[in-house]
Image (cartoon, rainbow, N blue to C red):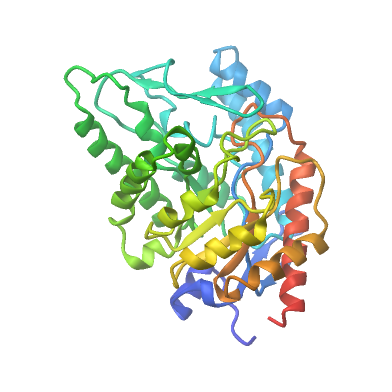
Length: 393
């Protein structure tokens, strides 16, 4: 290869689409400042979250309770973030995230600092019996308290690697509005303001230089459990379409959608729901990238057949090759075999690998050890590289 690009943006300008070209990344290691290159013939990206260190979880709890100053919390957060990015770089991953170290959860980060909320919102049950509960909106207007670009910029100052940014879907936040109408603030008013805020969340990340923006849409599969008729799923897809259609085709090539059956405390909320009900609707979303849980799926070939049937020609699919729910670390050989299997259903220039889900989407989730998360990521990177070599890419 004769051309090296110092930034991923330069590569896109030269080639039109990074999906059709090996990722070539020039970056400086934080410890040695040594210039290194990472070359991947197949795309590979993480989903997002990494288990937080105990010190950070403790500091977040104390800060939320007013027991420590914000400056003390931010110092602990900065230490955790630096360690996360250093360890991400050491895995060889060509694209990283901030590990969502500062997010209270993947779903509720925009609500940080928002006052017009009550605690008794929609409850999401998991298979092991535990639940997570969303807040409930009790008045208008609706505004984000925090935008994801805050996390992105904080991470980008610490690395030369491309950083992707996860954002929560507009459909997940639509659940904040209660079944009973809010006096003086209609559902239609809320929905329009929500669409504007969700668009802004994505656009800010793109303008800040995100490698790509991933919309977390874990409620897609859950919607079919709550409403097997598919009506709720169609509503969710419609809402996300309204946001995506506000972007250009070039922008949408850098926007992805992540779907999984949930992952929290080593349990899921909708793994029993058949992918066959989700994928036809999912691939109608005008996004360029799709990140799909697959490693933990009992019949991967069947799901890959569905992906082949419903994927649009210009859509890139990142298949899950590591399972955050289990502590067993996949070998690079296992990952390689899973990639080669997927390549018989998805063209290699439209294929990537990822993790099934984030390793700790909620800040207090300590079910997965931090070391295990990075070992799994390393296996994914090495196995993807091995597959590319064996496939002659």
